[in-house]
Structures are given as C-alpha cells and as structure tokens.
Image (tube, rainbow, N blue to C red):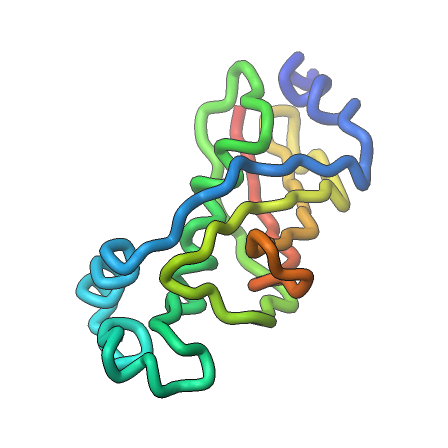
Length: 151
C-alpha cells in the first residue's frame, strides 16, 4: 500500500517548475568554501589578482554553486508531509556554463522530469535543474539531479 504522501507526490505534474528565491554569493561565502575544500586558487580568493582576469573579479567555485542547490531546492520545492529523509543518487550531464561572480545573485529552477515509485514508502525523483544568475541570460549550471525520498 502506497503512503498518502507518495500518492500526493505522484500527482505532481511532470515538467512543472519550481523556482527558489535569489541567493547572494559573496566573497565571504567563497572564502569559506575555499577553506573547507582546500581549493584556494587566486581566481576564487584574491580580488586584487582576479581584477586582471577576464572576469574582473573573483568567481565562485563551480562546486560551490552545485552545493547551493540543496538550499535552493528546500526554498523552492513544497515540503511533503511524512518525508523521513531524502538522499542524493547523483547528477547526470552536470555542466558549469557561466561563472558566478562574487557579487552575483543566483537562484535554482527545478523542473520535475520523472517520478518512479521504488516501493510503497520510497520514491525516486528526477529533476532538470538550472542555476540562473540575476541579469545574465546564460545559466551558471545545468544538470539532471536524481534523488530518492523515504516516507
């Protein structure tokens, strides 16, 4: 027997989009990510040297942009009653298309591509995911994100 929460999820329309609020990316966030990941290339952490690059300023790590998907997801996607936990299965076709500068705002756009009931209390969701940069027509990131939810 399928749980009522999964039944509700199964009614979600494929290709429906949810969009998060704008998230500010700033130098402090970039520096914190650099410290945790030990990725301290000057393009991320040295505004003076970065001024002389094609970007004119520091840029966020692509993996930082990807990591912020979780916060954007929780902001955008309605929470389903009874959800015990969700886990990432992985990404397909993850691409970084445009740099996120240290002054940019970004937001996530999530389009539900596929819902698969794995068992009466487990569901697999596949999302077409995009990270937009405010004022930039080119997205920062495109990916297919696959997750599993447990009820």
